[in-house]
Length: 210
Ligand code: SF4
Image 1 (spheres, rainbow, N blue to C red):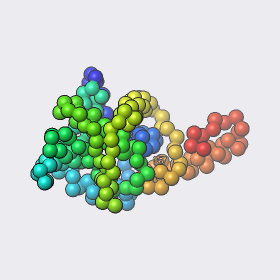
Image 2 (image 1 turned 180 degrees about the vertical axis):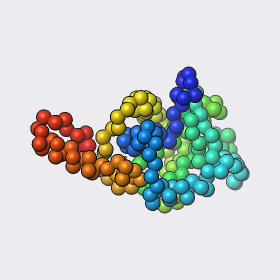
Image 3 (image 1 turned 90 degrees about the horizontal axis):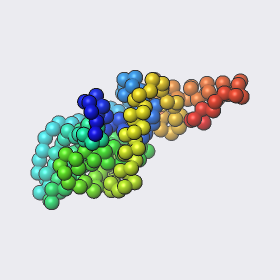
């Protein structure tokens, strides 16, 4: 249970951390944000679900832009969509514009939303879905103990990361291709620099991205 409003973490930061710790630190510590094709696409996708409203579709109540919180886990955020099934069970749906490379990170974000809903509504949330705008398909996610423990571990890692003043090293892999922060991050230049430093100094510490 967190003690102060400043201790609450944004659910989206869990997704950023699980995708790339350096991306998370750039956004949530350095306050860096750059638009690229993928973030603009994402914005367009989210425009449809960013206005709080609700409607009834084929007997299912659909809430859009629903505020979420968990006092137990110290989380806060907004669910793109929460559907309430016929028996009242909440079913969160997160909209994604980008590629499917961030599968684990997306699952962690969605499961964190489920933990909030369980605490807020005092009922189990066993499943939810990621909606991929490009394919217009849903991928259902079951909130089993595996993904729940990943969420708990990511919360702890995020608290540790936010207490630091140095940026984690770049991952410098396929994730960087779609990352809007690539110019601010310079992953490949830093990797080349680390390689060159190691060649010139065999005692230099190996870069974690290598
Ligand atoms: S460019 Fe790569 S290393 Fe840098 S923040 Fe993005 S994903 Fe992480």
